[in-house]
Length: 190
Image 1: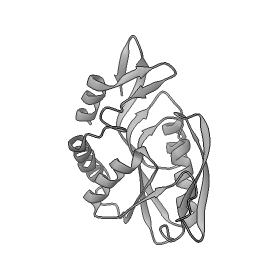
Image 2: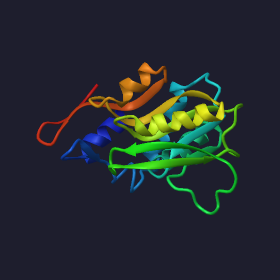
Image 3: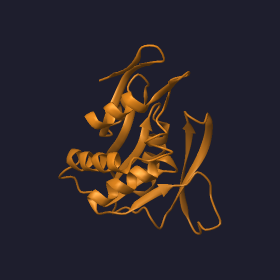
Image 4: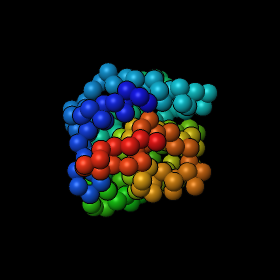
C-alpha cells in the first residue's frame, strides 16, 4: 500500500536492533485518515471471505482493528496481556514473546467472545518473528473457530515471522513489507 510506505519513509525512524519507530502515526499517535485507507485495503484484500470477527492483541493492534472492523461491519475482540478482575469465567490462553518488549506474555480471550462458529481475521500493526500471530492463531484454533487470515500493517520481511506463518498455511496480507532496513541506508520495500 503506497500511502503507508510513503508515510514510513517520511516519518519512520530506524533504531538499532531492527526496530522501526512509527509511533508518530501508527502506534502511539494515530493517523486515522491513514487507518481508514488501510481498512479499505484490507477489505479489498479479503473481499469475498466470510469474516464475522476481528481479533487482535493489546495494545497497538486495537486501533487498526477497530477501523478494519468498521469496514467488515463486525466486532473486534482483543487478547489481553494479563488477566484482570473483569474477565470472569473461562478463557483461552496462549504464550507470546514480544520482539519489541523482549518478554513473554500470557494472552487471554474470554470464551464468551470466541466460538466455533467464528470466522476470524487477525489484524496487527507489525509482523516480525511472528510470535503474536502464532499466539493469536492458537487462540482461534483452541476455540474451534476458523482462521480466515491475518492482515498486517508492516511486515519485516527480513525476519522469519511471515514465512513461518505462510508455511503453516496462514493467509498473510501485509500492507508494507520491508526487505531491508538500515540506519544509514534507509528502508527497502518488497
